[in-house]
Every structure is written in structure tokens, then in C-alpha cells.
Image (cartoon, rainbow, N blue to C red):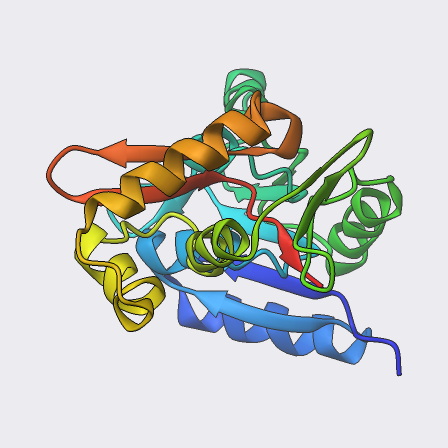
Length: 225
């Protein structure tokens, strides 16, 4: 069975999101809605979106800031911006933030759908994969085989991209039951991953250390096979 492309709609106006969601569903799309920036970021980080439609103003927040943040994390999901601002400078700001297209309100749904289909038809960069059967990290042009524990650590970080994972939590989940006695083992294995995957930019993500907080996978999370 073919999975319907999932489209994220980001707008604080419930009426607009409802109308767009129903219209896209009639055309065969699966839609999810976010009314807040934080919720939208979590949806982007889940890694299951075919595209997103983002309003320039989301309550008191800026859709432009959302797009900048998404792009800074390495997420290449196609994004169409919606706005009542029609000046050339406004369109330029949207595109410079990282949007793929900019649609001015009021708009024809047929036009929006056509623009969305254009973005979906463009080839996307293949995602990095985590192959459980071989404990391997596979990206276009590069492949690294990990140990079982390295693979488990990377999988745990990738399962919740953008979230800070406390050292103690990772230790409890991955090492405590195996008899390890020190949380420093987490730092050791993060070091192993960084060395084996260097440069991590080849795989589209980074593992960040946040002082006194833990570790975070930043960028486009790999897909677990």
C-alpha cells in the first residue's frame, strides 16, 4: 500500500488550517497541523514530512524564524510560505529564510496545489539510514559499520532529534543493565561515534555536547531501517 505524502500546515488560524487540511485530504494527501512554533519544530524533526505550508505570522511568532531554524538544523523539507504581504521585499525575505516558494493571500487553492506538486516532484537528497541488521550508518557515497553499543547510542539520539538526552538517562538505558559503573562511558562512546563518522556533515547531522545537560542530535535525523 502506498503511503500518502504527509503535509504539515503551520498557522495559528484554525479556520485556515481546517480548510487547507480538508482540501489536501480530498487530493490524496495526509495532513498534520501545528498552531505553534514549538509544535511545528517537533513535526519537522520527526522526519516524516513530504512538504510543509507555513504562514509568515504564527500568532506573535514569525514563520520566517521557524524556516530559518529548520534550515539551520539541516532539514531540507520543501516549504511553501503563505502571506498577505505581497511586496517584492517580503517575497525575497521568505525565500532568503529558506522557503522554496512564496504564495500570496488571498490565493487560489488550485494554484497552491500546483506549486506544492512542483516541490514534491523535485528529487530530494537521499536520507541517511541506520541499518539495524548490520549496525551500519549509510549515506550517499559513504558507509560506516558500528559496534552494537555504538549503534544503540546513535539510534537513541536519532529517535528524538533536537531533544537533549541527559547523560544519566542514556547510561541507565544502554549501560546500567550491562554492569557498567560510570556514566563517563557515555562520553567515551560519543567520542567513538564522532571519530568513526568524521566528518558527520557527510551524514547530515551532528552530535552536540551541551555542558551540564547532555547530548543532542542536531540536523536531519537518519532513518532506522
